[in-house]
Image (tube, rainbow, N blue to C red; front, side):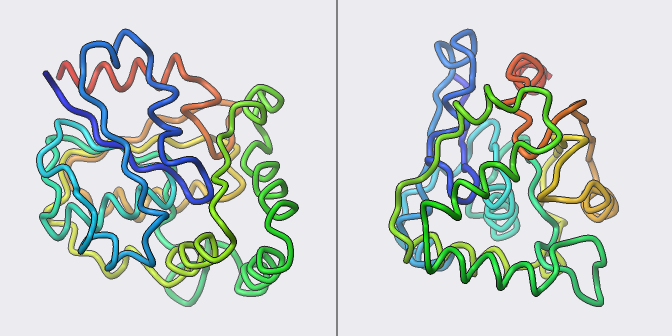
Amino acid sequence: MSSIFCLSGWGQKFDSIESFISPKISDYHQINSLDYSIYSGYENFVNNAIIPKKPDIMIGWSLGGQIALRLCEQNLVIPKKLILIAPPFQLVKNQKIEVGMTEKLYEEFLKNLENSVDATMKKFAVLSIMNDKNKSEILNNLLINDNNSKQLIIWLKELKQFSCFDLDFSEIPSTTYLMGKGDMIVHQLQVKYFEQRIKNFSVRYFENCGHAPHISNPELFNQILQEQLLS
């Protein structure tokens, strides 16, 4: 039986990717979704979590995609294939990367999160679905993490502090990157930074889609997943 290891996005339920894998796949493959958000940062996560070593496919959404790349680089996980769902190469822009969130916008978001978790998470959900043809359906299906603000803040800071410029990409397996053409959280131009560094890399664009391609178009998402399982 093939295995699939899933790491969800920041602020989302840990099994939110698994929720959109079709029964045609889930009934015949072992799926493991791991909750990194309960740990106090990446190092605490890798030192204490029981992490699947050799899944056939690892899927990481947004922050989960960055974590997946870090696990591969360190050989903590050795998947045959990697599916990245819109992770940023680097969240906040600087002299190295001009397409990203501004420092001011990040600090405003962090401050809002510290002051009002519920209101901020609702705003984040709205930002995730902008430019998506299935806004209302996605909003109903977004599985927001109900962790306390402390954990959300820890991982938001982790998301800002880490940059894929710090990665050695030589250990990254064959990778398929899923990108919504209307994503307002991760700029499309960030994809080129991955493309320049990952040897076996392909991009699948989702039309009229925001930051949640697998929720916006689960049929295409499952088609791509099935293709990767069979190839």
